[in-house]
Amino acid sequence: MKKLFLITTILAISLSCKSKDSIKQTQAIFDDIKKEIKSEYAPDRREKVFEAELEIASDSTTIILRGSTTEPEAKKALLEALKNKNITVQDSMILLPDQKLGDKIYGITSQSVINFRYGPGYANESATQTILGMPLRVLEKKNGWTRAITPEGYIAWVSSGGIAEMNETEYSEWIKAPKLIVTVHYTLFREQPSENSGVVLDGVWGNIVRADGESGNYYKVILPDGKRAYLQKAHSTDFAKWIESRNPTADNIIATAKQLLGFPYMWGGTSIKAVDCSGFMKTSYYLNGIILERDASQQALTGESVDISKDYNSLQKGDLLFFGSKAENGKKERITHVGMYIGEGRFIHSAGSVKINSLDQKSPEYSDVEKRLVRAQRILTKVDADNGIVSIKNHKWYFPVK
Image (cartoon, rainbow, N blue to C red; front, side):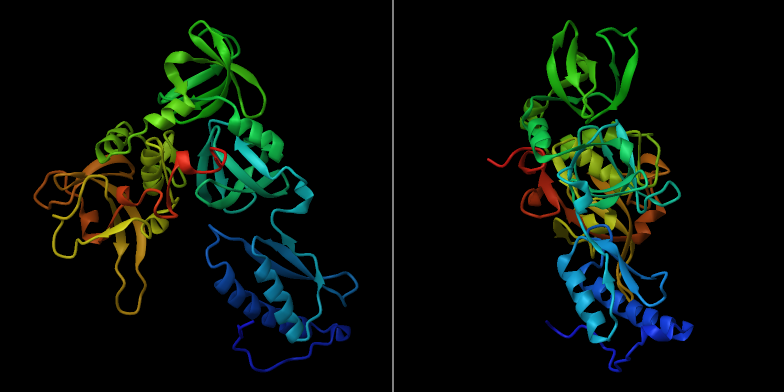
């Protein structure tokens, strides 16, 4: 294995001395090792997990390695590095998915919209959202919270009540079953086929449920958690036919985006209830059958680069515009905002609310965010040719491998 560490002085730590200085010294060495391994194996918490901590046992002589990681090689490197520093640990670090889950490592979003956070608790920062029927991969559970992976590979925590956990057989049955997708902004799943019936669940555009027959103007449906309900036929359509009907042209994606004009901005939002800037791009493309990366900084690394160094004449409808600060004076490029070009110098984005602005300083729609335009990426030329731009119909979590 290649040499990972720059620390040249090997310190022998005697646990039996029980001194605070010894513990601090051990912790300092561990922190340096952990930082370097995380940088190599799991630099982005949104895509890979590497969380490691030391704990001193009650006997004051045993050091316990705790935490979790999705990267077996990272754990292996950590243990080897600690051994090389004469630090002996009791290994209690979990490889994800956690074996305690048993075979329940699959999941389906079971509410209209669920909020993911960067930690297992409501006080943690909002990360992303998934919507009813969206498939997930479960990694671990802690105190009523579940860490899971979204279809675009984003890792975060969600309240466990928002996921219907499944084993492989149950998940396969869900995937293969005939399904319906909600095609209106909002709907209600009801107890009976009547507008006067009680509500089982609310629904939003893009929600997916199992089809279970018909009753008048309603479809009978099965929700991911097994509950049965009724959905208005006028508010939905066959999911398989919907997928085949997707025609993700720039005009179609822009038309979808414009149907969210005036909708509120919310940090972490990726549903039509509320969207942040990258969540708005993601939702607009998703409803046209394309899964994008979650965050603007991730989206900016996908697609085909468009030259805007001199002017904006090379831009085409549907291109994504990324704003922030350019790489200069030793500082790296920083992407903080994204919008979609809709032609004639105008772009649509979520900033306070979903709105249209212009890149033209002479236009009444001009926004000075234009001064922070860093790059433009063409998405539609790289669908299924770029790992970060995948059509739903070719995503194996939605459809079984043929």
